[in-house]
Image (cartoon, rainbow, N blue to C red; front, top):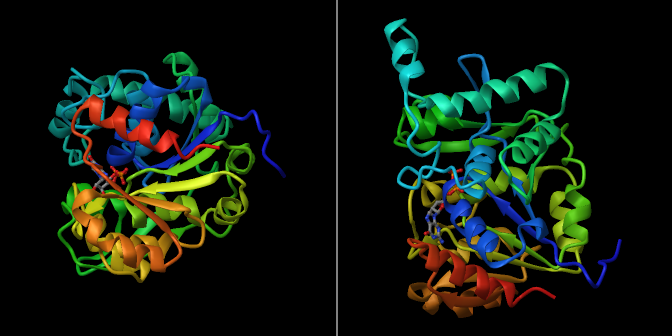
Length: 315
Ligand code: GDP
């Protein structure tokens, strides 16, 4: 399939917190209708009987202007009365869900139970919340990251939230990945894009599952669009969370050079921080173009500036 030369579609592959910062930058710098945001769903969990889709929700809330900016997840000014009552009733409350956030999970669970696929449910939530971009879960089928750790086998939320990413991770797998398929329109969006951006999300637990959905990695290799990736790390450390600790599960070192090695078969350009400028030659030796700039996104201006810099790669 060849790209329509008038395409302005930007395909963004993302997890939650880190990727959402750049997604917001693109949302502010382009027409929202031109964005197709592909979200990891391997962190999805059933909590109190409700289907929670943390990365999809972080992106939808970000694009709808509902996100809690301090936490980077959930709805701003939300209350926690339901969770407090669950605690009183003896339930587990380590996974925080706000009251208005629970309305999202109730609605999603109801629509899924009625037989609608996750991609259509997500589209309905977007429409109701006024989100004009397309938000695509990576798959309509259930995929679950399972981590083999020093504390036993854990789901991603048990490792990340409950155990505060302290156990040593020996290996991980994406349960269900072999038999899942990409969401409708996902491969076509990659093939027809003006630019594809791998956002600065965890390479093992956010980007890894998306890449492992059958057909996605091949589509990224074959698309005529440029594929750019932004590092979620600087000087071998993540800006937040355990990404650097999990690089070994991908068989690469915890650095931007390791990231280039993990993405080299489909990424044309890797955007790294100026502090990692010294690694540019090593990355280029792997056949990946490296660009150094400031990749820390603390303010809205940082997010917009980085998005603008990436837009220069669109064809
Ligand atoms: P999760 O789904 O909530 O785990 O979130 P993601 O995987 O999308 O995001 C976590 C990643 O975002 C971590 O690896 C962080 O290092 C990265 N990150 C957080 N803030 C920033 C930032 O300001 N700039 C960049 N480049 N990466 C960031």
